[in-house]
Image 1 (cartoon, each protein chain N blue to C red):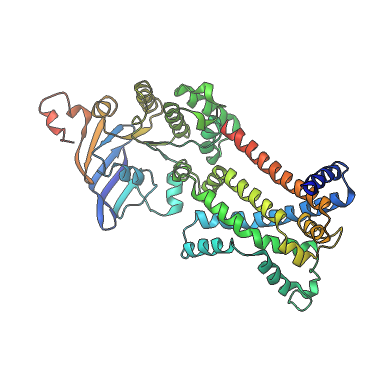
Image 2 (cartoon, chains in turn green, cyan; image 1 turned 90 degrees about the vertical axis):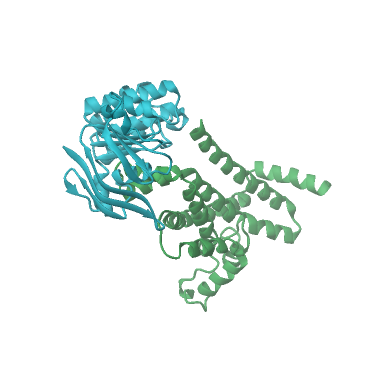
Length: 231
Length: 237
């Protein structure tokens, strides 16, 4: 028990001292995760919206495929992307391996199905009467889509929050494609894994506390905005 | 003047004919009640008149022009006909922005929009709720705002699906008063469905009875009550 309490106390001291290495790791994590969520949002929200809003042949198949991709293990994505960007891969010349860009590519693949399926769920839950009301008031397809999108906004924000939570907590892709290079591609999760291997728990626990606090803060923010709407 | 003329109109769902109307004419500026039991086809007819659905066969003329049931044509026509659902839904924003939606679509300038919204809300007695969140209103208030949203865009026709079915007596009286007022003041043709015979008698000038998709009676409201002979028109519902 002493090990846990000592580690937590030391970790809190480390956090309060704003240790430079720790802050750098947090910054890399936030930067990579934010970029991944942004790109996944740019691709996944319109994809999810299109799938939910439009009728087309094979729609069920697309939804099933996206649902299947939710279970994609990070190591499989890491391996898959590695095959493309390693020196012998078809994009080897771009020198992407062990860079933050490589991590973003892998993480976008990881969370794109999350953003798309959550968006599909959010749009599908919107009452059909919103579409009819917009149409009867003279809205064209784009304006009707805008109404549906607006009504589903909290569900779509939830998709992005969930995606950010997923990427900031993943370790497989960051390790395989980032390489855990100190000060460059070392994220909170890869640093925690490394510190554990070294038997050094203080930084690992400190990063764990920061990770959970970030996740808590994000959900708090989301609930705050949702609360403003409910009031 | 004829506003709608329906000829040989049918609507079929999975080989079941839910609407079969050889002929129906709706004149401009009048109030019509559409009555009939559940499943008679009232809402289906309302959807076709509101250009939200296409008939399976037959023709619809609107303002003497044949209606092509293609999306671009229907979209243009929907700017002249607004439908208010039985359970209307308001966008999750303020009452003001709900009314502003249709006006913005019609590219009405901001100062005119504000004036039209204020006038419409005053007409339904909801002027104090302009900045209220629309999704927090009661059933009666929602119905009144939905009506204001519909007539604020100055449509030629207002279609109401059971406008008083889910509100208390006080709001029923208010809604009836509003409908009569907008018909008289704005010359908007109104067609509403109802199960309430006295309400149809109070508000409508013409009543159309539908049963199993067919029109059984289509007569001026005055035919129903004033004489024992006229009363024979009243079908058994």
